[in-house]
Image (tube, rainbow, N blue to C red; front, top):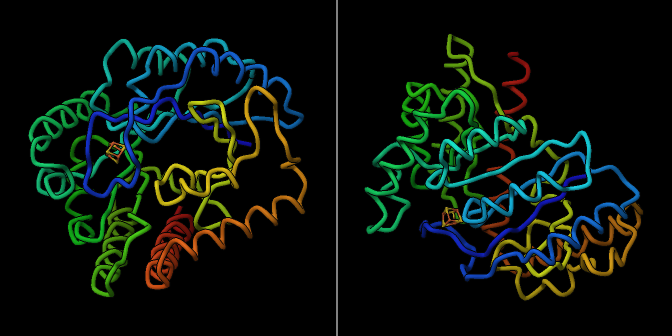
Length: 307
Ligand code: SF4
């Protein structure tokens, strides 16, 4: 089972495609302490602890505190960051605790400028490029691919590869309307990257680790900044905020209200999520998500067959 901490609702960037609302709402030390008691009370094993969405590194000290004090053994830590706030001190901490650190970026300069607001373009680009070059052997990259940047994905892949990035997680923008032409760009891009891999370029594909049976969402224990607990990462998107109450599975102060290891409960919860998806998104977006998911899965399966 995975536990994900939401450390803050704030971010120092404003990407065009980002569908989360930003506020100055941070996790408190009280919630962190209670979360440790909550985790100790769980009857099932926690294998992974993740920090992502918004910008977790705005809360570096609290992340360090959690990792140093959480009552778990043999657990893997994952942090996804926009790469602007990383420094040597935090990188040393990450190496010491074997944290899997992912930089989530668009690349290259032209692609970045398509997705960042005007005022951030140069500053973001220069900082993120410097940090990627500096830490590239250690980090993983979430290569964000939007409908309008899919046609540059091979160029972007080569750009990152030339900067010694060797761990890739390809992340197509899911919840938007892709035209047939953009979907073709995506499929073609993956085909070419597969050819590069089979010819000579060696890299690891992080998507293999993240593979899941449910295409549209992850069933993880999400600890919100106020201590509420959810069983879906869907609540991270503002589209689902109005459904937060019905998706809540209690809070760190009172433990879990439902038995999430019960198959019947899981089926009910998935059904509810499916219904919420279909009421919040148009049928063309749902269809688009299905296409993207199948193109990505196809790529991951072919990659595995080549290994
Ligand atoms: S860096 Fe991430 S959280 Fe921040 S605006 Fe961009 S996509 Fe949203």
